Length: 165
Image (cartoon, rainbow, N blue to C red; front, side, top):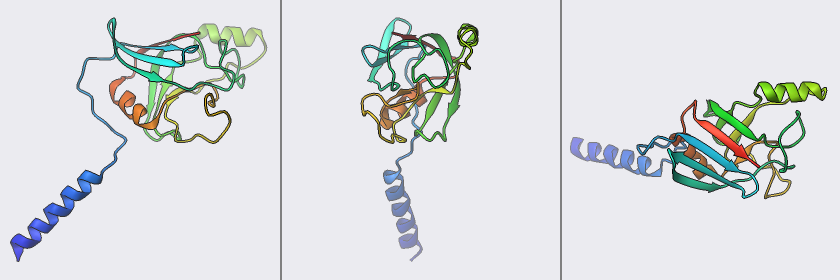
């Protein structure tokens, strides 16, 4: 009877493990040294040195052209930033924070009499609530949830991100 009970426990454990759908992946490949976003192409690339490791289709903000100048303008910033934080409990599945605003962004916004805004992330699409299915964020860069799981595993805090028009 003990052997039967033990076998049943092992079988249940294996079955539950197979059903696990954890959002936390592991990555053992080359280090991601840079992220490049091409806003006009709606593409994001993960690089190791000069080699593209992965590319992703992205969704942007509801005002996708031009550099972010102020809070609430609906634009994704353009320029060179870095990944400055990780949020495993994001309302948008998982997210990686982008270091916007930098000093220049703050100066431009102040000169216009506006706050620069902030909380710009690369994130999943779980929180999608409507608007245009193509571009719906409030300045962030969105990918599919499964893709975000891979990106979250691959990209470390401190990784450079270059966002191009």
